[in-house]
Amino acid sequence: MTAISTLARDPALPHLPRALDAERMRREFARRLNCATHDITACAIDRVRHKPGSKALISYRLTLRPAAGEHEGTQLLTARLYPLGNSSERFRKASRECLRPPAFGPPLMHVESLGMVVWAYPNERKLREIVTLEDVQTLRNEILPALVVAHWGRDAAILCVRRDIVHYVPEHGLAARVDVALKLTSGRRRTWCLFAKHYPDDEGHSTFRKMQRLWRSRARTNGSLEMAQPLAYQHERRILWQEAISGTTLANVLDDDPSWMPRAGRAIAALHGTRIRAEQQLTLADLVARLQAARVMLHRALPGLASRLDAVVDRLLLQTVSLRLGRGATLHADLHPKNLLATRSAIALIDLDKVAFGPPLADIGSMIAALYANALLAGGMPSRAQPKIASFLAGYRAHSSFLVTAFELGWYTAAALISERAYRSITRLKAGRLDIVADLIDLADRCSAGEFAWLPRDNRHA
Image 1 (cartoon, rainbow, N blue to C red):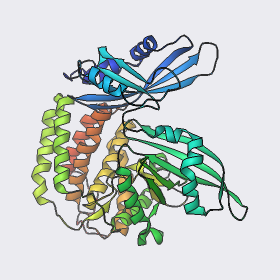
Image 2 (image 1 turned 90 degrees about the horizontal axis):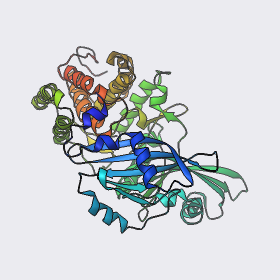
Image 3 (image 1 turned 30 degrees about the vertical axis):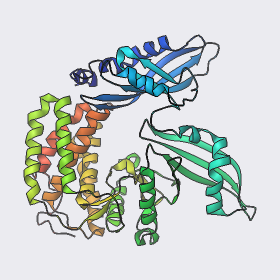
Image 4 (image 1 turned 180 degrees about the vertical axis):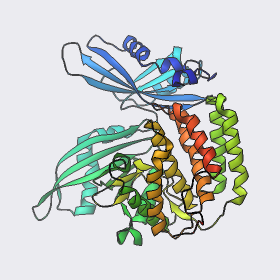
């Protein structure tokens, strides 16, 4: 089942399939932009966030070739898609904002026939400080001096600055790596590698406080817990600064080197055993609410799977009375292989925005669900993930004081397969995701029925 055929069923956005036709949109943008000096040679869809029955956010990447030259460039466009007839007022409101000239074309467009308002990068609705992180001179003259003084002293001098945008999710966040060449008091020169993350709201302030607490924890100081050092949070710009960590994500190495999996389990055990004050709480009621919300959204997007989905969710809801509500733990709360970094010898935790206090198996279930989903996306059977899961659990149980039972592990994994993996498959629409939703629901069914023996039968903690 393709994204186009599925989305055609959304009665609130019947025009969405046209917006997801990349070649059609290339022609649409070519008509609307002044192409006397450039040719739009390609249009790619980078990201889609779809809320069935309501709206969609689409990120386009245009490839541009100057009419008189050979070197191609790119222009990012972020489009918000509304029900037909609702976009005109949105466009008028957006037109009143302060807009920056993009590399090519106008900063804002209205495609009324598609109910679409389009912002040209670096303009968008929520991330107003993109221009700051794009401007090396602003970084060097206005932003970095205070960070350098706080970390290296007043006599440290900035020699040059290099900046690379490494991750951008429209309206959600932008991350940049900033390399600062310094001359220190001793005359020695070195490069200081920083990581900046820009938020659409003040969530970064909470993240900064949690990172500070984790950085000061015993687990971090004794080497059990690895993470980036938090440096500063700039309220007025909504930018969090931290030192960069060298490494690659666990997702990039777990197939080639299985020894990383027990180390990942050990790292999560260290986090769970670290008690910090976390403003966010993740409760069983929250997990149940997520299940219910995912069910509603999946019903809208994939009605053909409704009966199979209902059977699994109803079983999970009935099973909640049998879940133990024991000691809580400090959770990553967005745990998957891309949020763990393989460094020279250990696993470091990254993307700590969601850190919360709650049931430790919620993290473990999320990790197992992600490993299953990755196996499906790679075209393999879920059983391919079993050795990785077993290694991860072995590392976790060897270093954790929390009891792990097969029943509860099955429940939290099944819940994550529905409320995280299946839900994101229909709201983010990345390649191949819709094709595995039925398999994810079947896996959740098997997990909730206790068909997978992850642990010894006596369920004793190691």
